Image (cartoon, rainbow, N blue to C red; front, side, top):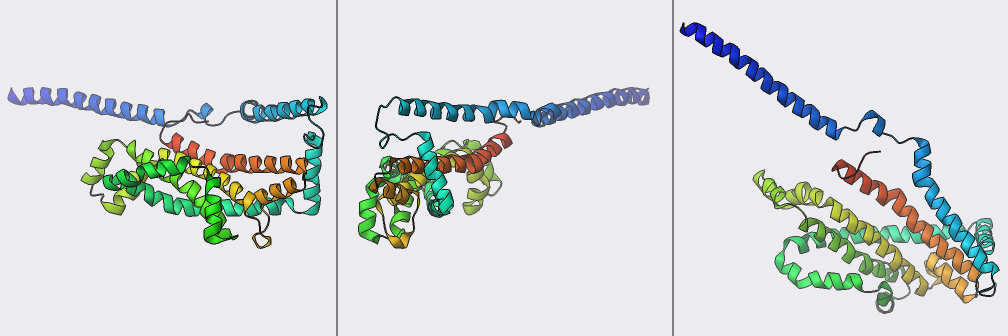
Length: 307
């Protein structure tokens, strides 16, 4: 009798165990389904991409040009003060014929990228130290915030006195404009890390640089990325401010120096053409680098719909 009861108990336990395993398998499949996009959601149709992402900026640019042309035709200002879009287009065409257009752009972009990379190398460890060491944060945290709000052009006279009319002046202005933004970005990212992540890292033995690499930086990545975007914006603005003032034949001609040259010649079409170039480069860097990187990070954390 005891054996028969044991057999019945065993047969009863087996279906229960099977049911629990099935529930766990179903739960796991459900979680995988949440993480994996449906086949129809992986890629948007080309027509929808054109309508939602390509057409709106084209329409916006066309409207701006149309309004600009209407204002020009209304004679609000003389032609030499408010040239038409065609006049500005002629300046682009002239630079293209002379083969200097890409030289001007490359000179500024190379300076901006190098200055930004140096700012990242300086601002990242500085931000980590400020975020994790209370005494350092109390000492220089407010200073970083104040430096971030200081106009970059204010550093140009001091940098000229320190370094003269050299590339050192330009890079000093870029660093002083970008480093506070990058450091404050990583401080903000670290402040938003759930304490559970840090405790789990310590439990698993993450200490020192290992904790920074595997816990702090990955967890603070969204805030850090926002700081990098802002740091690039400050780098580009600081670079233009420095190039407008720092003029020397040995430095080459960037976009800021080009715009100052057009201003000296009272060539408003050239000034507007340079402003457009500066705007286009800034937008292109964001669209080609920062926006895809931000989407990838957010999508990997489940914070952005796939598509």
